[in-house]
Structures are given as structure tokens and as C-alpha cells.
Amino acid sequence: MSPILHDEKKNSQFDHPIGKDMPSFKILTRPGMPPEQHGYPGLQPRQERRNGMLIERDVAIELRDGVKVYADIFRPENAVNVPVIIGWGPYGKHGAFGYEVFYKNGGITPGMVSPDAIFEGPDPGFWCPAGYAIAYVDPRGAWMSEGEATFWGTEQEGLDAYDVIEWFAQQPWSNGKVGMSGVSYFTIIQWRAAAARPPHLAAINPWEGFRDPYREIAYIGGMADKFVQIWQMTSCWSKNKLEDVWAMMEAHPLYDEYWADKVADLSEVDIPAYIVASWSDQGLHTRGTISAFNELGSKNKWLEVHGRKKWEYYYRPESLARQRKFFDHFLKGIDTGLEEWPRVRIEVREGYYLGQERAEQEWPLARTEHRPLYLDGSQKALIPSAPSESASVSYSVDPCFSAHSYHDDRAEFDVTFNSDTEITGNVKLKLWVEAQGSDDMDLFVAIQKLDKSGRHVGLPFFSAQEDGPVALGWLRVSHRELDPMRSTPSVPWHLHAREEKLNAGEIVPVEIEIWPSSTLFRKGERLRLVIKGDDIYRYGEGTFTSSHATRNKGRHVIHTGGRYDSHLLLPFVPSTGETS
Image 1: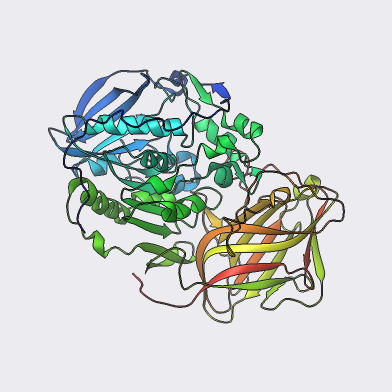
Image 2 (image 1 turned 90 degrees about the vertical axis):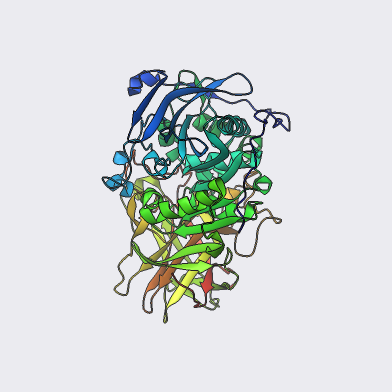
């Protein structure tokens, strides 16, 4: 494989045009919290030398409209012609936010990252000794950077990233090759920056970041996720105004131009990409990171999907070694054997931190066999043939009931496998449902694994938790309308363009997307389908986990059998073989 490299620095810092009229909607803002209240000392441009690094603080970078953003730059002392890896996020280039607020520190153990590493960003302690410069950028409107902040990869933020990338390529110590890396927000901006096609962005390393904010964080299944309110608390520090994402959610409850502005056209991306996702970020980054792999226009792209805690996986030595091989190839021109990398690498999970890594050639797996298991309401079971007799199962969704119960107010359907069975890919759930006492329904779905004794097998979940599901799905029934062009037999695509409320006694079919996963069930183990009226996994107020605002009241009824072909469409994978 020949390295893809630029032969020279191009004088193109501001060549990229706007390309279209800026959006017509009005951004609702909130005042920023003074950075000094979070211990930020204010701008103090300076240099320091330690541990073989030259560190430049509060470096001003002027954007095309005259706004200045500020960066901290770490580079090998006395080095020239070094590539740059940018970490771009709103949490503070000075390290204002850490892992200690998460359960068990989100898997980050003492000594795993250097004191200079910021939350979710590439670690200068690893990259500078390897011959790279690391640049942390406070985006427009964040902390001391000028302007008003917008979030989640708007077109404006993509243009800002374009200008910053080209600025770094022109620095006298730079070799003109720029990459991007980092987790979550640091990935969200990579989608937009790469789609803007700055000439000197040579490679990206997206590591678990959603790409469709409406469907993957704000309104998953059409329901507002209160996690956004918690997230805004981490992104509130500014001398200026910031986009009030929660207020914009309330003003834009359906998919429209506002949400479309936050979705980059990944077909425009033509640079190499090493993409890493996880099965364990259900309800945040799993769906978007995996779908982005196929949407990218890049010829040189790789997908890796694991089942572990995302931050620990990003910084573990094996992952850092792969990141370095990738960037050494495309930013330094070193042949690191990427031609031997499988196009897709997945972990097939069996339990908590128990799984096997396997090489694949594509996603989704071409050999997948989608087969339905039908819900049988009379037996609370999943069976291979549709029941001839109709039955129904109901559960209460009244707030006064569900607040005091965590088990009985749900429907559960089990299947026990009589041989080792791998489920890898998207799952689709079709239900015939009825609301009693309401004109809408919020449905929460989980796929769980139970061992041979019937005990729940907990899996890593939502960055830090350890008792999570195989996979999750969500749907507000009034949002059930499908896009016939984008839906497939195994993955429904909901338009979220209007609401269709229910009439009393009306029974309607719905299709629910259950996010991708990969799990091996041994002979005698069970798969359990859980359907509920609120979040199935709850960890208390203020924790960094998903929590949805529901419309539910009364009872939910699920109809099965006879004319009601409620079923779970599962991606069965025949045994194969290369493992690593």
C-alpha cells in the first residue's frame, strides 16, 4: 500500500467556500459560565519545556471571519517537519474535565494517561515521543475563544476546523500533514471537518462519535433524552454565548433543517479513516460510528468494533500501537503494513470483558442469515413459527406504578438456544401495539443475555457501567412512519417528520430499530427480549447515562399471534472462521 501524502504545503488556508446559504433557523443561545469560576486563569500565552516537549499555551488562531480561537500545542522539543494530530472539543484544552466523575473512572487506571492528556483527547505523553505534535483546540465560543459556540458538528464548526487545520499545516515546524483523533465530541467534529475537505487533512481516527444527533442522542426513537441537559453542564464555560441545545430541542421536536445542519455528507470524505466503535455505547455512539463506515467516500478505511469501555480501549497499549501504525503510514509515509489489516475487525462478546476478536471483510456481514423469532404472548416466549392463536401481553406505564417497580411493569419473551449461536448485526422488532388510556406510547426495548442458570449476563455499557444489555431500541409510536427509500428489511428508518397519534382501541404495527451488537450465546443460554415503558437501565439522577422524558400513561398492550405477526428479526451468523 502506497502512503497517501501531500508533496508540499499548499497556500489554501481560506480557499473553501461556504458552498450554500447559511441555515435560516435562529439559534437559541444561553450565556456562558465565566471560565474563571472553573479555575481557568485566563489567557496567558507562554512556552514551557519539559519531558522532551515544547509546550505552547494559548496560541491564537484567526479564522476566516476574524474570530480568534485558542490552542495548546505540544511538540517534540527542537523537532521540525513533524505531523500534527488535532484534538477538538468543548471541554477545555487545559484539562478542565476528567474521568473521576464516572463509575470506576470509566476504566481509566492510574498511569494509563499522562498528566498532559485532556478528557477524550490524544495523549501528548504518548505521541510527542513518537514524533508528533498534539494540538488541543478550544472551539469558537468555548472558554476564552471568541465568537458564539454551536455544537455537534454544524457547518460553521466544520469551516472553523478547516481553517485551523490549514493554519497548522503552514507552521514552520510542521511537515504539512494533519490528522485528527479523539473520542466522542473529538470524533463528531472529525465527520464535519473531513467532509469540508481541507487540503492538508491527511487522515482521521474517529473513535466513537454519533453522526446523526437527532436520531442518536437528542430524540432517539422520537423521545427527548435528558442526558443532553447533563451534557450541557460540561459545555457551559464561555466568555460569550453558547447554543442552548436543550432549548433548540424543545423548539425542533421533529427532524428539520436544524438537525440536518448537524449531519455531514460523508460521501465527500476521501481521506483515510481508521474508525473505532463499540457495542457498549448503546444509546449514544454505537449506531452512528458504525453507519459512518459505509457512508464514508474514502477508499482507505477500516472499522474496528469492540465490546469494552471506550476510554480504556482508546488508551490501552494495543490500541495506541494501532493508532500509531495508521498515522505513521499516512502522516509520515512509513510502510507499517496496513495492507495486512482486515477491512473490518469485531469482537464477538460472551460476557463482561470476555470475547474473541475476529477479522471480517465488510459490514454488515455478508453471510448473515436474518430469521424471525415470533412473540408468543401465551407462553412469554420467542418461537420459530408464528403462533396460530392470538394473545396479548400488557404492562402498566403509569408513573406512580413504574416509580415503585423495576420488574413487573414490563413484558419479557425468552428463547433458549440448543446450540452455540452468534447474533451479530442490527436487530429489528416488529410489534402490534395498543395504548390504553393514552394517545401515544413510548417503547423501550432491550436484548439481554442470560446464562444457563437464568442469571443476567452484564456487559459494559454507556462508557462506564458494567451490567448493560446486548443491545437497545426505542420508539415513540406517534413517530412510527418509515422512510421507504432508506428502510431495509433489517433496519427501519423513521422519518420523524410528523406525529401520528393513536385512537382509542386502535392497534397499529410498529418497527423498532435495535442498534448493532455482536454476542455469542452458548448452548443452553437464553436471549431475553424486554419491552418496557421507561428506561430499562437506570442509574440515578445526575449520572452520565441516558434518561428519557416519556408521554406514557395507562397500559401498553402487545398483540401476538394470528393476524398479529409480532416478531424479532435476528441476524444469525454461521460459524466461520478467522480469529485473532
